[in-house]
Length: 286
Image (cartoon, rainbow, N blue to C red):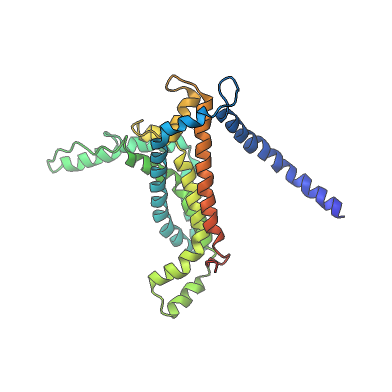
């Protein structure tokens, strides 16, 4: 009986194992192989040495991703809490509205922001029209092709990934705990810091990871909303693989990808470390 159950478990996990091998292990193995070899297939570390040339690009990518992640957290937490306190039907409607932009193609969403932020876009056109009524000439704000536009694109595209995990955790918090804290004289600040925040840390950590990882490796947003003025590490990797700058070099591109992968793994490890320091009920381990 035990042998049969063991074989059944192995049969059930086999498709997942094959999937992981084909779509995770093999691609990672190829990245490592190309990163540690030259054009002839010989072993070399020169590809990794060339990474020093792009150290400032890595820093800019991390900086913008961190700014976008912090903004997403600040915006997502109160929204997620408000949704979690609604009636069940209203919660379903609000979650649907949060997920609705994600049903649209990523490129289309980003192109839409180009139309909004351009010098002749919707925002500048509207402001010019309003100010022209009072006889004021307005040249318009320069919003497109800036770091601010890139961060805005990151926040818009990845905000749902911060809202949903926080909302999921907050819905599991018993509202009677909050009422009990109020009965014991706790004000809003103490309720947030002593009750809500500690129990929502797992959702916050998941949200930070889900936003930071795609933000630090993006290249579409920086290309469309940044106009190539700000060069992120994703743009560099894309150029080496596609030869946009006239040079195709899979080896250097793979080396840059490998370093980015390591940075993401380190970030995830740090987040998991904080997650392990939280008890299942949200309290910190003693």
